[in-house]
Image 1 (cartoon, one colour):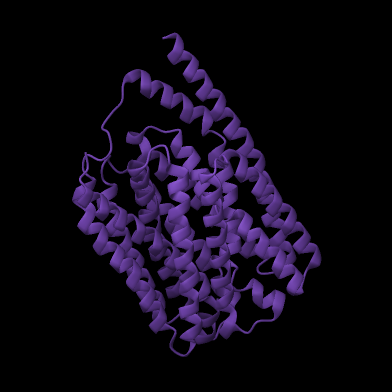
Image 2 (tube, helix red, strand yellow):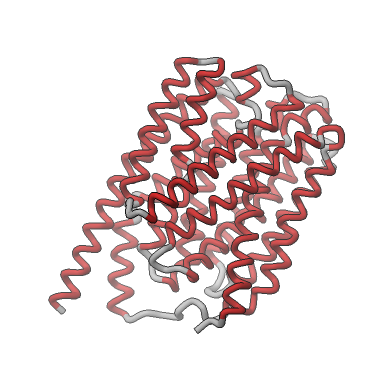
Length: 398
């Protein structure tokens, strides 16, 4: 059994890791207007950095997916260090290509941290993975809400607040290194052959549709997050110096949505019910916002969309991991996060290249993605429940 001391170190490492994810994920999008002004280029020229962030994330989680079992505790501090290094480069980037490269480097660290931290969360809480991930992602959203406010306050010298934000993943790297040895033996090394066969059946059947839903969902969430500092400028005419506040508002709403979902899950609401209902509601609200087009009304509708989708990633990922055995958590979580990162990168690239920051078109794309995610989520959760019932019947008759 893991001792209380190591457990506290593990919890601290996970908390700091998820907080760093929030700070990093907000820092790049929120810094676009200020960096564009510093480099004297249009903000749209920097939008591909959001896609490169997710491309790096994709590369990072692929590393975790193919890494040997038990390596997540080592990967966690290394990824945090890369996050910090990427932000330092972004703070002093002298040109658009260098800033894009910094986003890519940051994304690689982000991917390493997210996949390894998710697998380690699975090791800490088997049956409560969706709720625990929702709570940790809520903490991540709080950090993501605070980071852009630092950028708004430091517009005169943008490098200073970015370096302050970089200190968060640096602290996560130290904490992860301290906790590294305590993860050894926390994940069971194997299960019976029968149990593995049942788990494999559940993974193939129950999770088969969830990765597709994750691909679409992360694409929608990436657009909302990556465009959070540019859309307010189009909808409300906010100047570049204050546009980063849009990212702070976005992540504040994400925190509200995630903590509200955590409370509802604690009261017995099933993730398989919450997610499709919230996604369909968000899709409808996004379409209405696209019709409204401009002004405060459109902004309020988009805000409601953000609250609805806030816990979706954790619920999809947590539900899929709940169908996997603990010893396969690192491999499965890495694969799932990689699929999500691919969706975030590919879809945001496509949107940046076609509709750029045109509000109505962006919102229509988000609505379509969320509607598809809702349908696939319902089908995936239904198939997972069918396999659970089948497994229970087999256990009863055995």
